[in-house]
Length: 116
Image (spheres, rainbow, N blue to C red):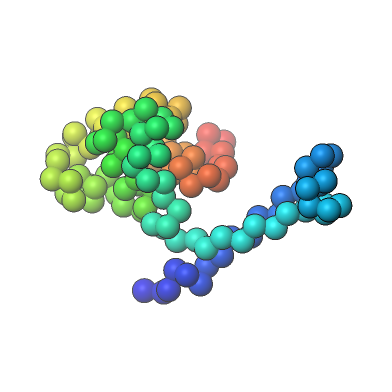
C-alpha cells in the first residue's frame, strides 16, 4: 500500500475586500493539507453534532467516508446489513443526501453533481 502522506490537496482561496487587509494586501490565501481516506473523515462526535446523528448512524457515516462498504461496516459492527441500511437511510434523511457518493462528498467537503 502506498504511503498516504504523499498526497496533498492545495486550496487557493481568493481574498476580496476587507479580508485581504489582514494579509497585508495579499490577493490569495494558499492552504495545503495532507489527504488520506481515513485522515479526512470527520469524527463521530462532529457528525453527531452537525447532523444530529445517533452514535450508530454516525458510525455508518464515518465508515463510508473512510471508504468502507455497507457490508464491511455491518460486519465490523456485528450488525445485520438490513440494520446498517436502516441507519444509512436515517443518515440520508438527516444530511439531505440521497446517494452514498453524495454523503461521502458532503462529509469530505467536496462538491459533486450526481443527479445529472
